[in-house]
Length: 177
Image 1 (tube, one colour):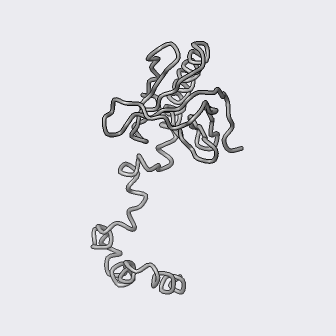
Image 2 (tube, one colour):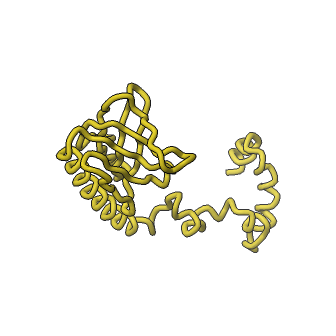
C-alpha cells in the first residue's frame, strides 16, 4: 500500500549553495520532521521532509550514497539525481547517530533490492535498461520501417506513412484489423 514512513526524526534541513558548493543554505526555518519512507510498489527507500506542504527533501537512497557526519550534530549526503547535497542539523548527537544508522541500513536494503531487480530485468524493460531492451520497441524503430524486415517492408511502408502524426494514427489502424 504505497509509501510508509519507517523512521522519522526532527532536524534543521540545509542544502548546499549551488553556486559556491561550500555554504549551507537553510531550507527550513525551524526543525522539521525528516522521514525515511519505503515505497513497496517501486521497492525504493526515500528520505522525505516537508516544510508545510513543500517538499524540501525528496531523495531516493541509492547503494552508492554516503551519509557523512561532519560534526557531532550535523550530517550530510549528496544526491546526484537532485544534483544537490543535503545537510541535517540535529538537536543531539544521539539523533544524528540514529539517522546515520538508518541511512546505512536502508542503503544496504536498496543495494539488495537493486540486485534482486537486476534478475527481473531480463523480463521487463526499465528506463535505465532501454538500450538493452530496445528489441521490444523494434516495430516502431525507423530501421524496421525503412525495410530491414524484408517480407513486411511494402506493407509497413504503406501503412506507416501517417505514423508521424498520432492524430491520424487512430483511424487507419482501427479498421485495418
